[in-house]
Image (cartoon, rainbow, N blue to C red):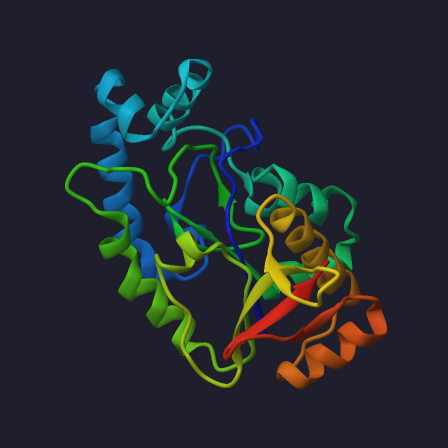
Length: 248
């Protein structure tokens, strides 16, 4: 079973000093060529501050992100589940997980990065800035990642729970099969009509990830996941074909 999360734009500073990025320490070693190419393109982009600012869609208060990118190969690393910040990761709250829960996350939670592709929750990564819609020189991110990431997901024969945003899912679609579902956050109005949420989407996914990691259950199929949700106070229901609605 894998729960696939999106990354976040924001990253926590710091990490284990003296331990820079080591691609061989990351999960999914078959993605190493793509990771190397993305890092090389990011280094090329980082040589020109004006071009990089535009390519990364940075505002005047975000220029520190350029320094992060220039140092990405040598700066300190920390586990991915701790590196990412923001609403989703606030809900997951990795700092308060027990050792047993962290071990479960390391085995069953992956994060889809625009720079590194699929990452295990405990994979050591530096701070960086690159989004799904960033423009790297000579390396369109969609074309670069789609086949490689999709192949890794297709090779996993257990349950896949895709909690990525649609933008990140497009960088490596999960396979269409019975045990592969897309998680959509919805709200049910007074009329009974369900509406997809944007503002509370990330918070709901973070809390859902927290609930799954806290429970520590490996679900073999969607039915098992739905039965657990029913007992865990999580409103999870079948939605459109290939989707589950997380109702908030």
